[in-house]
Amino acid sequence: MTDAGSIGETLLSVTDLSVDFSTMGGTVSAVRGIDFDIRKGETVALVGESGSGKSVTALSILQLLPYPTASHPSGSIKFADTELVGAGQADLQKIRGDRISMIFQEPQSSLNPLHNVERQVSETLIIHRGLSKAAARVRTLELLKLVGLADAERRLTALPHELSGGQRQRVMIAMALANEPDLLIADEPTTALDVTIQAQILELLEELQNRFGMAILFITHDLSIVRKISDRICVMNDGKIVEQGETKTIFDTPQDPYTKELLSAEPSGEPNKAKDGAPVIMEADDLKIWFPIKKGLLKKTVDYVRAVDGLSLQVREGQTVGVVGESGSGKTTLGLALLRLISSKGPITFRGTEISGLRPREIRPLRSDMQIVFQDPYGSLSPRMSIAQIIEEGLKVHNLGDDAQERDAMIVDVMKEVDLDPETRFRYPHEFSGGQRQRVAIARALVLKPRFVVLDEPTSALDRSVQVQIIDLLRDLQRRHNLAYLFISHDLSVVRAISEHVIVMRRGKVVEHGPAAQIFDAPKENYTKALMAAAFDLAAVEGVVGT
Picture 1 (cartoon, helix red, strand yellow):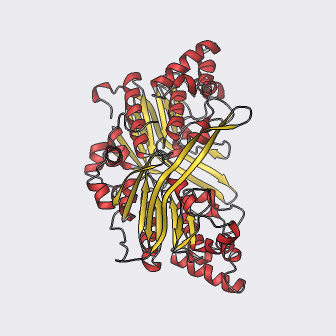
Picture 2 (tube, rainbow, N blue to C red):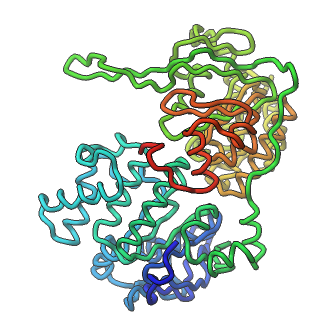
Picture 3 (cartoon, rainbow, N blue to C red):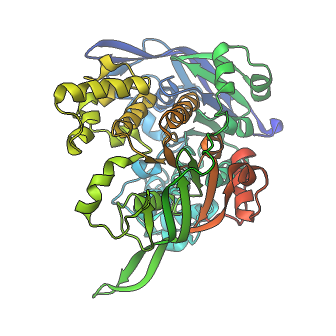
């Protein structure tokens, strides 16, 4: 949050802005007559759920929408007295990346996978400042150090895939700040990050804002972030700004029903508890997953990446075991190993049968009993298959259902169970919202009547209100079918709402584990305390979590 004394005159003024998209089905109004201002040195948060028009508004400021498919039926966007709507490419080129910069939500897809860090950061310096390659290299190194990228000089030659999520986001921030812009647009810059890295990035943005005196338009659906960083809030719903005002006023006395709904959308309720003496469904003892590091002409193994290093766990019938930790801690690797989708060492027992040594054809009959739901439902569902075909695929593989008619009845039943309209089963994934697609992914797993389900970040790509619905659904399904869950997430408020037992991982090892109430209310280890502080207080954690 900016010091009130450092906020200056109006820098950006948006007046009666509307955005329409021409589609085969007609005109879609994405933004409808919105007004807001941003002053120099100020942070304004634009909040709302997916589809509310936040990102379209941000892209309109830089005139990056796909014209002429997109159009502005009305409105004005003035930046320092320059009208941006309808401005020529030459004028826009002078502003983009120089006076106005943008940080995108997913750095992995925003960075060029073929170019190293130095080339990507220095490019804007060469274009806008006319620096030589040598001068741009020096300035790039300064920027990378400024944004706190560890071992910055060595990272100059790194490609994006060689960096962690937090490191990639720091590179994106360095690119955005290269020319010391007057306005920084941050579009969901922390959504894909772990809570500890998120806290560090937010603190970094605040420090850089104070240093450069820039204004920030911060776009997010996470109100816990907004409370800490913003001076004013604009709440968007269905293309309109339904409420705007000082941050404290919006949080303390919200006026619009939608704002009140957003503020109350937080995972709550108690996790299901396994019955006393419930049988162990999945068990691992001293599990190790090591990936070799090969170097030299002969590719000799010189070391190992210890993704999971000596982990033991039990998941009982009707129980949810939550697994938390930052990216690279081994959470997803653990889930894949338990399902025998990657190799590991150490016994893994499923319903009393050791499966770690089984060959693929021997484990295939057990596959229907062990299922997984992935983080991104859009990426995990085939865009070329209808919902019915997606759900039916597993039934065909495991020879469930005597004929097409019986399988269709099973599809209808499972869609009802996850609160989807069975009449929509012949539609395709792109015709559904994010929450509906995740329900399809859950239905695809549930139709096989599994006993154990790995839920790998199943809510992290969803809006808060949709997260609440999915958590309620998962708890309900668990009660009905006595399912055992391994719930992997970096969102501790979600983990708290669904997990009976929690495992905290760091660099492949278990830092702490125990009943959820103990882990959340009375953590013993410093790392666990740091996670809790970052998640629930959004306090920066210095020296505890590396980037």
